[in-house]
Amino acid sequence: METTQERYDYLIVGGGSAGCVLANRLSADPGVRVALIEAGLDTPPGQVPPEILDSYPMPLFCGERFIWPELKAKATAASPLKVYEQGRVMGGGSSINVQAANRGLPRDYDDWAAGGAAGWSWDEVLPWFRKLERDLDFGAGSTHSALHGNSGPVPIRRIGPDNWPRFCHAFADGLKRTGLPYLEDQNGEFGDGLFPAAFSNIDDQRVSTAVGYLDAITRARPNLTILAGMRVERVLTENGAACGVSVIDGAGTRVRYAANEVILSAGALQSPALLLQAGIGDAAALGNLGIRVVADLPGVGRNLQDHPALTFCHFLAPEFRMPLSRRRASMTAARFSSELADCDSSDMYLSSATRAAWHALGNRLGLFFLWCNRPYSRGQVRLASRDPLAAPEVELNLLSDERDLQRMAIGVRRLAAVVQGSELHRHAGDFFPAAFSARVKALSRHGPGNALLTRVLGAALDVPAPLRQWLVERFVTGGQRMHALLADEAALHAFIRKSVFGVWHASGTCRMGPSSERAAVTDSQGRVHGVHGLRVVDASLMPRLPSANTNIPTIMMAEKIADAILAGRRTQRREAQPALAR
Image (cartoon, rainbow, N blue to C red; front, top):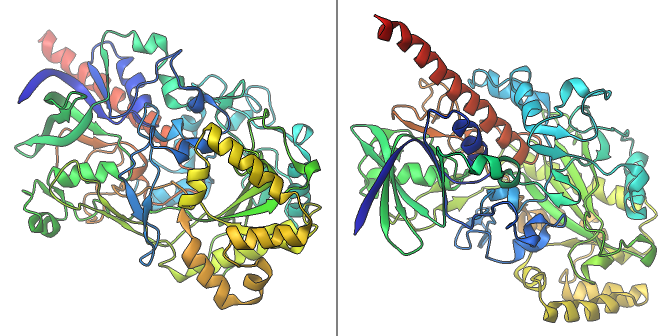
C-alpha cells in the first residue's frame, strides 16, 4: 500500500555533507517548506553517538551501523568487490570521516571553470569556503585572515608543532630532509610542503554537518521537516519533470512525498543510481534494463573519480607511542610533486597518524596514507538491476591510466625515503605495507574480546627486532618486504595494483557542464539538464577531483548553490510584485 503525504517546495534526498547544509540554508527563508530525508539514524543535539563525536574516527569504518554495508566497489578491474564505506547517518560522510578540513588548491577550481563549470573558479568559490568555516587559527586578525572565515558553522583547527608528539616531529624531520618546507596553513599556502593538518573539530569532538548546520534552533523552524530512517527508492517524474519521491519508511510502508523541486544529495554513488532508476541516463543502457527513458544523459554515472591510495605502517618504539587517552592521532601531512612528465605539481599527498587503530596493537604502529592528488583514471557507476533497492555496480578503475600507477610508485619511494631517513626507523623490518583487510577490520571492531586479543598481539611486537620482523611477515605482509619491493620495479607495480584502494572520495558522476556537452549532467547550479524541478548537489557535481579530501569542498558547493537558489527566489518575488500591483 502506498500513501501520499504533503507537498514541499524543496525535498532534499540525503542528510549528508551537502544535505544538512541545504536544509539549514533553504529553510532560513520562512516562505518555503523544506523536507530532508535521510535513510540512517538522526543525531539531534544531545543524542550524537559518542563514537561519532570521537576525534579518533577509525572504528566507524569497522562496523555496519553507520554505513551502507551492501554498497561495494572494485578498486581495479582485477580487484575483488569490497565494502566502500559511505555514511548512512545524519551528517553522512562528515559523521564518519577522518574530519580532514582540506580545501584543495586554487588550480582545482580554476580547472572546473575552464572546463565549462561557469562560476566555479577559485576566486568565485572562495567566499563560500569562508562562509562555511570558523577557522580557530586563521580567523580575523591573523596573517591569512583574508582567506578564512571566522563565523561559519564548521570550526576548523590544527594541532601545531608545539603540541606534536615525538612521532610527528620525527615524521616532519624526515619530510624536511627531502627538501619540503614547513607551511603553517595548508588552506592558505598552496605549494609543496609539510603542515599541521586542518580538521573540523572543536573541544576534541567532531563537528559534522549534522552538528554544525542542524542545531536546535534550525530544527525548531516550523517550515523544516526532518524525516530520518526513510529510504528513497525512486524519484518520481511527470511530463519530463520531477514531482516528488517514493520512500520506504521504517515500517516498510511505501510513502510518496510531492515537491516543487527534488534535490539529490545522496553522494556520488547513490545520486547517479537514483537518476538512472528514474530513467535519466544513457538511453541505450536504460533500455536494456527496461527502464523508460525520461532524459538521455550518457554522463550519468560516468567520470567517477577517487584518489588511489596505499597504507603503510611502522613499528613504534615506546618513546614514539601516544597515550590512548589522547584521541586525535592525525596531525601532520604533506603535499609533494611526483615530477612525472606532463603531470601537475603538488600531485601527491601524504598523511600520518600516530596510531593505526584504537587498541593496544594499533598504538604500537604509526600509520601512513599515500595518495595521488591528481588522478587521471576514471570509473563508472551502473545499475545492477531495475530493483531500486539493489546496490549499484561501482567500478573505480583506479590505475587504469598508467600515469597514476607510475606516480604511486614514485610516492612509495618518497615515503620510504622519508621514514627510513627519520629517527623512527631503527630496524629494516619495522616499516611495512598494510591494508584494510577483512582481518584488520574484524580486529578493529570495539569489544572486550578484541581489547584483550590486541593487548596480547601488541605485547608480541615488543620483542627483539628479528622476531618482530618474522611475526609481521608471517601474519601481516605475507612475506613481503619493503626493501625487496623498492629494489624491483615490476614487483612494486604488482604490489600497488594488488593493494590500491579508494580513499572514500568518490566524485564526478553527475558533473557540471553546459547542456551542449553530452558528458555533462547538470548546469552550474546542479540543475539536471532536460528535467525540470530536479537538482543534484553533492560531490557528484565535481568535474575533476580536487587535491583534497572531499568533505569541505562538498560543503562549499552546497553553500554556494543554496545561495543561488535563494537569490533566484528573491528575483522571482521582485519580478512578481509589479505584476501584482498592476
